Structures are given as C-alpha cells and as structure tokens.
Image 1 (cartoon, one colour):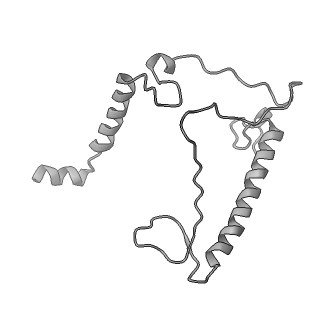
Image 2 (tube, rainbow, N blue to C red):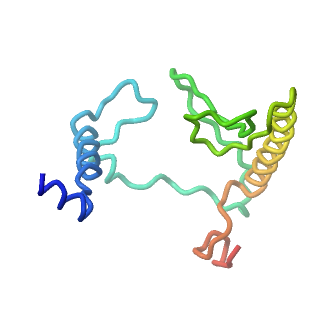
Image 3 (cartoon, helix red, strand yellow):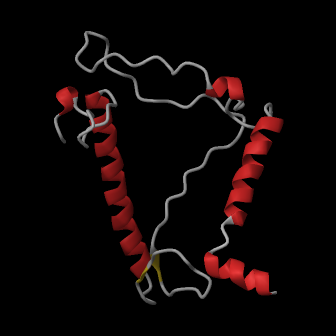
Length: 149
C-alpha cells in the first residue's frame, strides 16, 4: 500500500507506456489484418521511400481533381455535432448551447448552424481546388519563397 501511494505522488506514467508498447507489439505481430481498409504497417513499409511529390500549382499541368477515397467494403460515416439541446443531460460531456423548451428553438438554431457549416465547407473546397491543395500559412515554407501567410 505504501509503494502505491509513493507511485501516485510521483505520477505513475506506466499505464500509457504499457498501452503504447502493446500497440507497437500488435502492429509488428499482426502485419496483415485483412479487415483494415489500408495496407498493413510493417517495419519495411515504414522505411520505404516517401511518396512522389505533386507538381507545383504554377505548372502547366491540368487543374487538380478533388481528392477521392479509394473504394472500401467498410461503410463510411461523418459525424457532425449539432450543439443545440433543450437541456443538458446528466451524462453529456459535449460542448452544447442549451436553447430551452421552446417548440422549435433547437431546430431554428440547428438549421442556421447547418447552413453556415455548408457555406464553410464549400468555401474550403473552392480554396483547395483553386490552390491545387497546397497548404498556406506558417512560416515554414508553406508558401513559395518561404513568405509567412
């Protein structure tokens, strides 16, 4: 009991380390998990050469096509959190806005939020298509010539 108290005082970080070690062992021992939608991670694939780079946005190449995911036998889903509730449930840990018991209060907030979300996604898609998908900003060379964004 005494050693347990000492360990707690110093901060026992062995659980995260054990979990990380277990994940690494599983990756090495189970290299071909057929139910995963991506190629298995093996030590040789980790040491392989990096993928080829894309042509510059200023090249004479045709405009980039929007990214697409390879076909997958597994279903795909997108979760969008609508943070408007009539009241907070005792078990809820999500960031929400309590809108009260009005008959359509949550619906009105949700509709406006969804419209803004759609506009934001369309604007982000247009920016990505116009830029050829390159990242901008930072100061680490995200833009040509290393200018800050």
